[in-house]
Length: 266
Image (cartoon, rainbow, N blue to C red; front, side):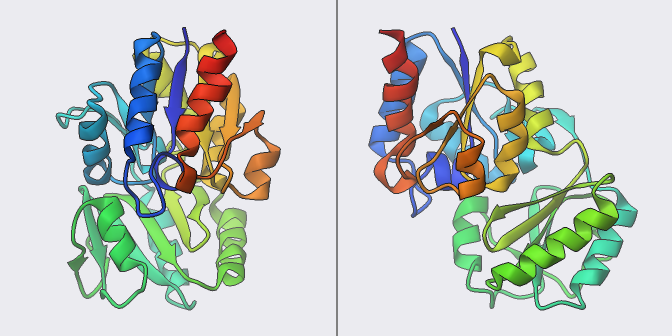
């Protein structure tokens, strides 16, 4: 059999960031057929926990794009943090741009205010309230993820390109949403993450399928045997996928399981 590794936001959950009954049932059909299933996400562990609970997952999962490999009970199997010099330099540059800064450290979410319009959505994704702080200096030596937030998508792309040019060999820098630019450790990317998850679950990459919707999913698309893009995925992601399912608002993961995975066993 094979292993399916799924992204969460924009993929496994709907636009309200909830698991639907149809998706839960499809994952169970997949498992009943003998397939492995796990998740990898830019979310912190706290944000993955409710998904794992709803799906009764008791297998290794990936938080922070695979920077933290853990089990539902909290056991951490692997942990990579951002290089402190990169973290400090990136945050300093962000202060010169029209972006909000969020820092995730110690499975806590830190922000300087709650005024950003995406705070409400992140409360759901992270499954926690932000800790409001005056600055981030004391956090950057143990940061798991730094997220730069802006609805000026073109400006965020420009900032991404600048950071990648300067720090691309020292950190993973990718957009997890059109309005989120994430920095994680070099090894905290979904390519290395899916490799570690497949190994932990006893599957070779040649028997691993992945599904996602954003640029931060592309490293795992490049490693897995098969890649499925969501119908709501960016064109860049769709171009790298072998199959394209329907949108997450239409139970796209359930459709992919039934059509592209279980349907091809018949």
